[in-house]
Image (cartoon, rainbow, N blue to C red; front, side, top):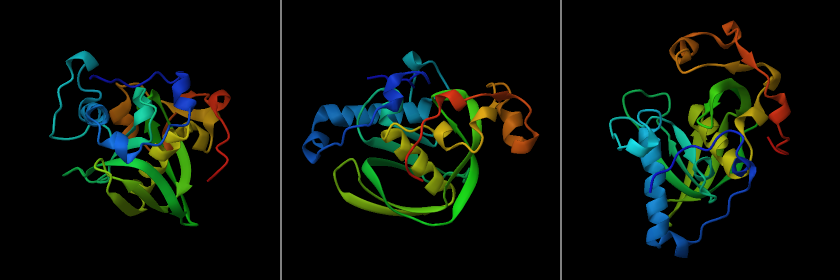
Amino acid sequence: MTLKPLDQNDPRLRQVCAPVSRVQLREREQQVEIDALLDLVWTLGTKPAAAAVRDRTRPSTVGLSANQAGIMKRICVVDLAIGHRGYSDLHVLVNPKITWRGKAMVERTEGCVNFPTTWGITERSRSVRVAAWDRSGNEIELKLVGWPASLLQHELDHLDGHLFIDRMVDPAHAHFVTREQYADYRKAKPEEWKEFVDMSTKVRTTGST
């Protein structure tokens, strides 16, 4: 089973994903889907999807929700070692739910595999608690601060049909960044970037913070 990211205009990105039962988790088909999501996380951006082979040296994206690849279920894969270049810490989260948000907010630059040339500054809670199952159906709870908290909020938004552009501080001036410009973009300060794309017409109200 080979997956690839949906185009940014695919309506499935705006749909709410369905919860997964423990009975479903025990089925081989469900575990194959989870493995396919992991394969995509490890190979994204390195090879054409048809030739993708998992490379365990480093995940090529820090997060992926199932509906980003057309699987309409409440499953996501996240690398909680975001910000640490020396190692990865991948987790499969099933039916994840934010149970608590800190009052402090933080602004960060975010991107998304479904919007490969679009980046922008978003505002999210600095700390969150998340309850979920692992891929075996065991209950887990995570308390996250900083980058991992922002990452989880980004992925959980996907599962509810929300996109990072909905959280942008200024979606009318989202940063336009080609693949060739990416290295320079990561070195630059956000306020220094001079190429923009107007995403305001694609924004939807999230109804929550």
